[in-house]
Image 1 (cartoon, rainbow, N blue to C red):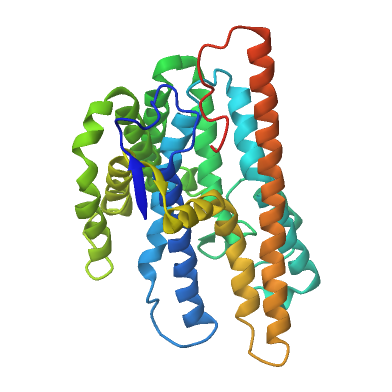
Image 2: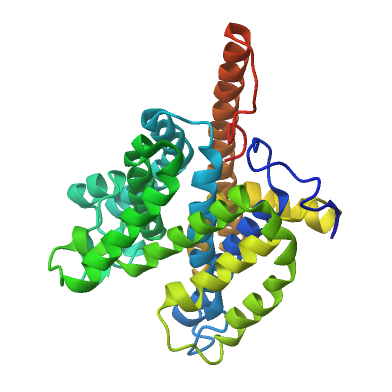
Length: 361
């Protein structure tokens, strides 16, 4: 993997409409980490090959995802001034594939319930899942029908908080960070018996705050970036060491803060090329699809190896491929709409700056 530019000639944070290569690669690493974690989980539950998950550290990919999300939401909304436009763009990016897969799980639970564990075809569960409202699916387990959607519940809540802060204009990032911190503080003092307030006051949401902090440094103190490029090494080691000896701190500090440092130190490196770099950028582009789709594929591959196994392998790949293609069509539609808006704006008035986040994010 090679690269050809650093912060000196990378996109200006004030005119940031183009893709950040290092960000895409980190997205790819986060998605692959979660995939590998669930592969290790299958080795235990489905194949009985081990008693412990050999890839347990992969679960920390979620923390990196949240940190990246905190940064991306700020980065992609630099020139967005309407909370409705902001939420519309987020919904178009998140909802279509999630709805497709959630409804798919509901139909499977309805037609072939024995294929699932604690998931049942409950209409109220479907509606709550589609509305990103947390609920207790099994005793002590708060998951939507598509279990990985628990992270999207946090994402959508963060988007809502961020949208509420548009009135603060240039201080909206700080206001959003403070709102998240207030939610966490309330949750630390109040023992909620209801699922929704307890869920949305969990301290893992602080990872969004770390992402916002990275953005504020990136945008307002770019000179700092040149001095932190090496910090990804101790930050990565801090995370890897915890596979053997977890630090005695909450996850959002022991994993989330090192993840933020990795993001901060990676941002100065852009225009990454080479086969490995291009492959990772492609995976980064498809990271959301990969994250949501892989449980479908894993589930089909975990059934007993018999004469029909190759047929199920083909079905699994077709399932994943269909979801990826659907998401690709949605992304192309969003890009087409964004391009049309840019053309209309440039035709109606003198265009003096880039539209941040109108492309990839």
